[in-house]
Length: 179
Image (cartoon, rainbow, N blue to C red; front, top):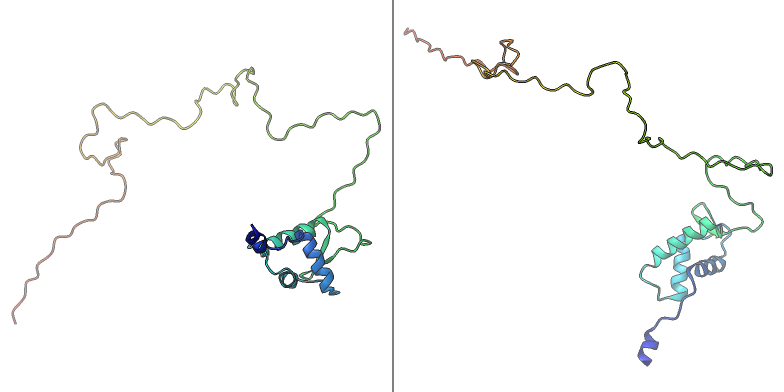
């Protein structure tokens, strides 16, 4: 039992508290960067968890977003309590006009295409046209099959489909004339 208590590292304060202590102790007017904060924490507390850098980055970002810290020129500094709240990027939202009392809002229409009514009668897009929709079916083959060359088209145009075969030339033998 006694050995477990000796090997156990002293309990660390929360990471936001560690960060605030580090920034106060470093007291740089331009703020402190992540590496200087990390080095201060390591030198002061020594034995830190394995994921110290990840935890530090996570808590710095979180404190930056909540407004506890201000991030300026790659340095973190304490937020000035008198400074106006920092606005996000992009266009500011329009101010909402309050409704007069007694007005009831109707529920907003849902986005997207409304669902089909299952009881609605089926109507075609072009009334009066007797053409079926989609691609027409293939023509049926003649009952006798294709006669003659199997490469001929079924339309009977007499010309085979695709690229014509290469013409083989017969080798000519040259007669040598004796001089």
